[in-house]
Amino acid sequence: MIKVGQVGLNFGLNGHIPAFLNDNRFKLSSLCSRNLQHAKEVSNKLNVPHFTNDPMELFSMVDAVSFALPPAQQALWLPKALEKGLHIFCEKPLGYMPELNNYASPNQALMVNLEFLEIDVWQKLRDKIQDGILGKILHCEVIWNVETYAVSNNIKSWKTDLSANGGTLNNFGSHVLYYLEGLFGSIYSISAMSMPEFPSTDETIYLNLKFTSGQVGSIAISTNSYKGSGHFIEVTGTNGSAHLRNTQASTVSDFELVINIRDKAKKRYLSEWTKKEGEDDRVLAVGRLVNKFGDWIQTKEIQSPNIDSAIRVERLIQSSLESLQEKQAITL
Image 1 (cartoon, rainbow, N blue to C red):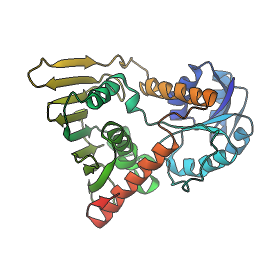
Image 2 (cartoon, helix red, strand yellow):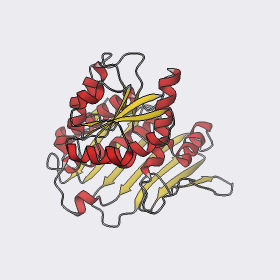
Image 3 (cartoon, helix red, strand yellow):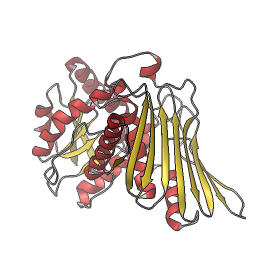
């Protein structure tokens, strides 16, 4: 049995903990929140034997730790958990850049919650690209237009603060940059623009990309689009195109993939991941990653997305910020 502790009881309570409770290899042994009373209440509700407001106390009692913290707090506590030799499941963005080749023991599992490539129809799209059915990929476009709760209610928090590793680029762009490289390979250069203009905030972010493969791409993400169109990806190859879309009020569920190949009938694939009333659908993806995390701990076979994935995303975000600041394309 792997003893796991949860640090952070906001998304940690609604997203991480249900995923760990669904994997019988883990035992939820400790909870940590800055609000000790909240930690106590959750501990009593879930029958967890220990609670605290001190992450170091939690570290001493577990084999693995799950972080669901704002990036600035994660940047403070994640290195300390690494030093303790704990297995770590954490959120993106990391909030800091670990020193190269000096961030983990070979025996530590380090899983990062970059979740979209865990979805069934996203994996189907990746398979179609890798199989060459679309031909040589020419270009791709990502549009992700939503209105977040924080923006619509004018809530001032790290989630809307670019300087605190929040904002649209960090919260949404981190996912997109990771999955685009997972689908198409390394990004070679980034040219970025934001509205309002950097460094005020980034409720809307535009990125133009070049890949080492020679293809190009674009990203348009907004968190201020009232009843926005949702999450949409279009891929164009020499032999056809693919559309992956989610227009529902959900994050990782209800996607539809459409494949169009020249002189062949259109094919549609509906995701088996559907959002249920009153549930946080992100638990579906977190659960898939928690299963990989458990496999990594048990077998010592490295899984993905891992700390190297998160570091790569941090570099891509930093290049995007550099492009915003210098108002020119940045080569990685």
